[in-house]
Structure formats: C-alpha cells, structure tokens
Figure (cartoon, rainbow over the protein chains, first blue to last red):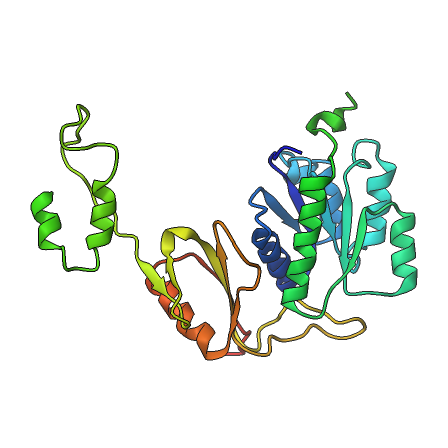
Length: 150
Length: 128
C-alpha cells in the first residue's frame, strides 16, 4: 500500500494525555497533520466544519477518549456513526477504562479498535506503533473524496 | 575557502568543512559558486558514548520527574513520571528502545540543548 498524507484528530481533554499521544504518534513516524480538540462538542463541531472549525480538514482516523467533558466519547461516537459523511472514518478509542461495559458498548458503536492505556510509556508507544502499522501500512483507508459520497 | 579549511584542519569543524567541499560543485565546475558556506551541524555525544549528528535527530521529548505521565491505570489516578526520562526520535529510527532515564537523561538533555535540537518539555507542575 502506498504512502499518502494522513490527517489525524485526537479528541482528549487531558493535556498530559494529548502530549503523550502526540509524542507516541511522532515516534511512530506519523509526521502528518495532527489536530487536537478537548471536548466532545468541539469534536463534533470540528468534524462538521462548524464555527471556528469551518476550515477543518476531514480526518482519516480519530483517536478518541471516552471520558470527555460536555459530551462524552460514546455520545461523540453516536454522532459520527449516525452521519453518512463521517461514519466511514475509523475511530480508535484510547481509554484508561477496561470496564467490559465500556468495551462492549464501544464495539457496538462500531469503533475500529479499543486500546486500554498500557501501564508504561514503552508499552504505550509500542501500542501506537502497532496501530500505525495496521492503519497506515496494511489497511486500506477510505479515499479522501469519500465524504462527498462520490 | 581552501585556506580557511587548512586553517581549521585541526578544529572540530574540519570534518564538516570537508563534507561541504565534497559537494557536486568542484573547483572547475561551470556553476562554481562565489563562496561556499560551511554549515556547522554539531554532533551530540550521549552518556553511553553514542555520537549523533543533530541533523539526524527529528526531536527529543523530556519528561521531568514528577510530571504527569499521561498514563492512567484502570480505576486509578494518572501516574507521575517516576524518574527524569528522555526520548530521542531519530529521523530514521533503527530501534524503538530509546528511552533514557535518571541522571543520564539530564546529561543527554544538556547535550541536546547545546546542539539546538528541538525538544518537547513535559515539566512538573510547581505551585509558586
């Protein structure tokens, strides 16, 4: 599979978690655009290009936390999967929760993968590298024009 | 340029100057430039003796001891970083095992700062 630029959206409210995920993504040699929003409502506005996100670029993949202010991760997922323009975007949940109910509900909401945050930086970086290998080198992502339905 | 290189032949910049002279624009090249500028790209010596060229380093990340690690165990609070730790990302990484901790991390951080490598800092929050 050929390389192409990848737009990544991180939906995470904790600054330290954002920093770690950003650093791990860079470690995985994902040098393309990484955007960050810090709550569920902003995530929906970003994805719909509303308000200050009018110029936002549709992400190729979303890293989503579940425990978010304003609108939690499950609610964001419901919006994404109900919208024909957004539902093809793979969503990877990165959460500190290993509750069976959270995992089952996330897969019911059609997440691409659910990652329980590992206990160390090394394991976390390894997990992000594995996601990178799968989603950017092995799996074929939807084409850029998919959002227009063409 | 040759005189300059001779004068600096014993200096740490000599290998860099030699590299600059080895470019495609030789003395008799029709497109010979008016002047050659030697760009000094410092090398970084790590605690274990490893030499890295700053141009080969993408960036480094430094977590200060006690800063928020971003790791949150299931059912618990986010963990502070137990010790100073440094992560160096090369432009062409050959290994993922490149976390450096403790005093070695602080020493290597100083070397990277001196070489003007881009560094992301994660500091401990201190109440003033």
